[in-house]
Image 1 (cartoon, rainbow, N blue to C red):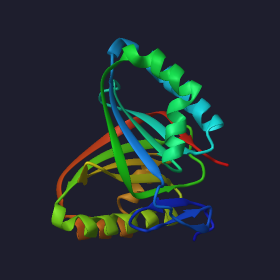
Image 2: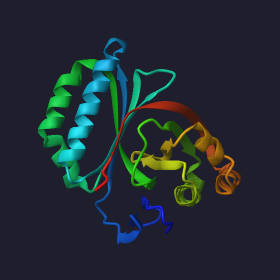
Image 3: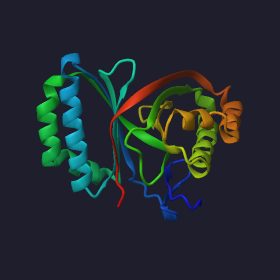
Image 4: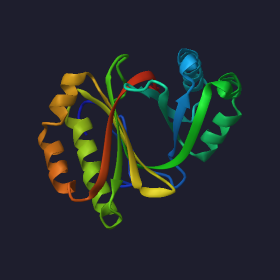
Length: 235
């Protein structure tokens, strides 16, 4: 591991590396949930404020929550993604029963015009121990040709691990597959700034990934996003 401590967890690797220490991955964890929300345009700011309060409360109170990130598409701030990562299923269930979640659900119910909730399976979840307050955030939605899925997951896992280890400006790259459609992958990428992202896409490990996987990808949708709150457990 690099001297820059990192968290890496993914089904393709079969192990978690937390601040430089290897730990066996348990069959039950981590549990990842992805929410795709469409918010009433007149209530976007109210929703953002409620989400910030909720995520901060959840991270402070819930030992089993590893991360909860909420971001909005730059071109359409009413479209919001929330990525939630828990130690295991019990931690997720405890979150649903928590008073702060019940308050959040009650207060925002009328703000949400459309909600799609996905169980997700980690490909690789990579993050530095801390994130910046105003980073450069990107989203990606990929469809992988099913015969190439395992080869693609291996290649992208190596690319994410190299990026977290080698690039100071790559703060986090989370890659998951939708549990009910495993060849549909979702990415949340967090960079220190736009220059760090531009440097990343010119890096040797990223260019190798592009070359290896270009024939495996059926479709690709890339989006810029704005952070609402990036909540990461730091202790």
